[in-house]
Image (cartoon, rainbow, N blue to C red):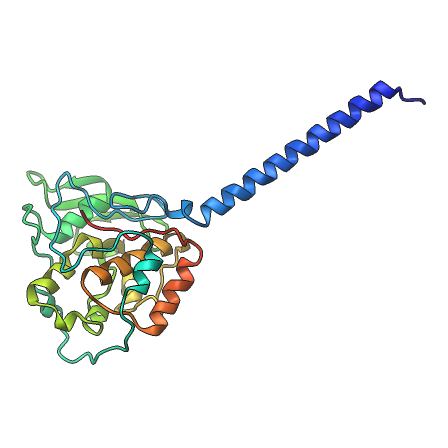
Length: 265
């Protein structure tokens, strides 16, 4: 069978077009992956971010900022990390939860205690006690540390399923500079929305007072946000990091060098 020259040319042209399309698609995929693993992966992790790769920080509609000793430096978390002092842990002598004030005060004076503020901020379809706009009795959310959908129902047997995690654990903070803060500053640290995330109770218990060198969320998608949030808190309250902690933070941020610091403003 013979093939005409014109038919041959048409076949060659279609082949070149197909290859050109494949090359264009490949370039688009590579560009998208580059964006995802630099700034794009956590581009939403700003003050009002939410979703599977971030956790909420602040809702100005009903929350008020907590006074922080220092402004959080704008820019990348990596840059802010390099601005933190690197030291060993101080002795745990004198640590107690009471050193950070009574648990869940209404520090921002918006009429609601901090635990209910954070539940209201982090949960979807929030249900309040009848006649109250503060006391949260139910809701659900995509829990950031496990990535699973979790239901919250207030009750003696159920409330502990959702706990409020201090992103920088108070025990860790105590050994890394919080002993030198004033009582009011420690109270702010314990109630600052920047340092608080509603979390799976079991995951929170596993974390305990761990830092980034000893504990990171199982859900890898939240790790850049989580580490950047720890750095932001430590910068705001003048806390330091250990060498191992800094190395662990850098390792996480290597996958998202464009991750920004964040504030509760």
